Amino acid sequence: MTVYLDHAATTPLRLEARDAWLSAADLVGNASSVHGAGQRTRRLLEESRERLAAVAGCDPVEVVFTSGGTESTNLALKGLWWSRPDGADTVVLPDGEHHATLDTVEWLRTAQGASVVAVPLTATGHIEAARFAAALPGAAMATALVANNEVGTVNDVQTLARLARDAGVPLHLDAVGAFGHLPLSFRSLRGDAARSTGLVAMSVSAHKIGGPVGVGALLVARQAVLTALQQGGGQQRGLRSGTQDVAGAAAFAVAAELAADERANETVRVGALRDRLVAGVLAAVPQAVLLGDPVDRLPGNAHFHFPGATGETLLFLLDRAGIAVSTGSACQAGIPEPSHVVLSLGMTDAAARQVLRISLGRTSSAADVDAVLAALPPAVERARAAS
Image (cartoon, rainbow, N blue to C red):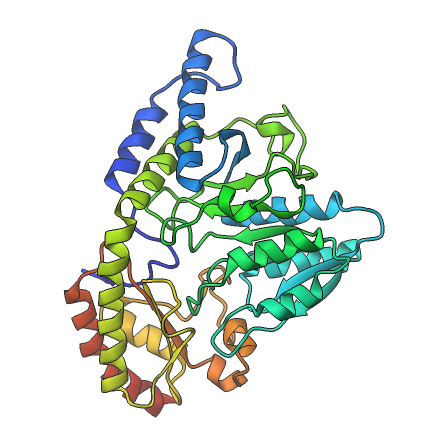
């Protein structure tokens, strides 16, 4: 059996979420139809929206279901750009963001004429508040990760949201890797809910918390002004037209509730496993370096630099040993390349190719940690020899 330690890429489907999906899939009727069958489906859809909203700390009308985090981010960034005020042409973009954000902003730059103001990260992967604030005046919009998807560092998004609000700039937060693992409330982060600036959109996804792949949501403030990516039947406030995935919404809502219910206990349990893993790796491989903030990080994230050993080789050797880990984001089409996140920490190109992300989740156990600690040291030695 594979020791699965790539939960940051995706985590196993919860049985309860699968059952909710299967039950909803048996319903007949389009949720936009007015007959009884359609309205029964509509009730389940709206109940699922209400349940997800309760977990996310927002109003149900602010939940726009999507196909996942990438679509949510595209809708937020392109929608805000196309609705920007006259004369505003700058996007505030911290270094080290997820490729869904980086590539969307690059498209806005090359195809739409956007200017980009980069905000450097600290050596531990934090978005520095002072530099973020300095980039905001006059910007069309800003975006930021709640927690870095590679090195796991958690940002002070309460402060970032306040800074954007004070500057009158709409802010999008990418919470795909943080939702369900950190205490997040869209309403609390928004502060003054009457504003159309500050935090106005937040991306979340189901498959990071035990829901199905292909389901996500963009939380969109009532006052937010966004242009839709596609036109059609006007569903979901006109922001995401099309027949809605009721089964996916139902499964997402169940997964979100379960993740919220167990979060406090799982943070302690998974955090303890991660700390044991980190201590074991640093003891067994003395040259290894833990990247990211050593304390203020996602509970299941352990990201290491192994000098002299390429991450690609380590991944292959561990996979041969039945252990699934990663070198970074799973959203790079399987193309080996230096980690842009590690480069943004001020490290070299060589170092950015010598990293490994081990991410734990709700199915992780002490036996999984033991397996990694047994297999990793010889894998590092072999990788160094190969290099």
